[in-house]
Amino acid sequence: MASITIRDIPDELFERFKEIAKEDRRSVNAEVIEILDQTVQYRNLRAQRLRALDELAMIRASQPPSKEEDTLAMLREDRQRQ
Image (cartoon, rainbow, N blue to C red; front, side, top):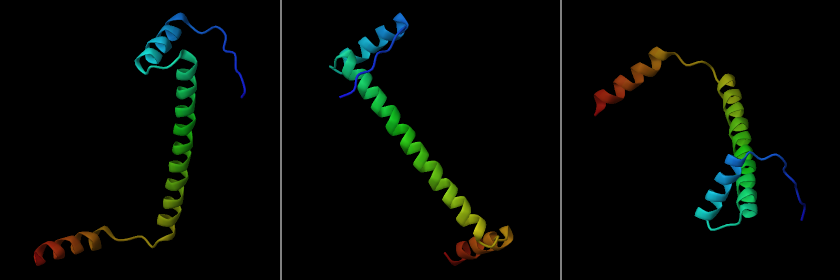
């Protein structure tokens, strides 16, 4: 496994890491690895969501525009049937 050295960690931040690690019953090292992993997963998920939104925008742009009046008329008609 690879190792990493982090220098000049502010004391307040290190103390917070120690507190969180204690709450989660982990070592500070294990807590830092967990937080790094969560951050990477979050970034990956965010990238997937952005790609999905781009795809949806492309699909929507390729569809003929719907007239708002038509949609409202359809809603009114549906409500009158009930």
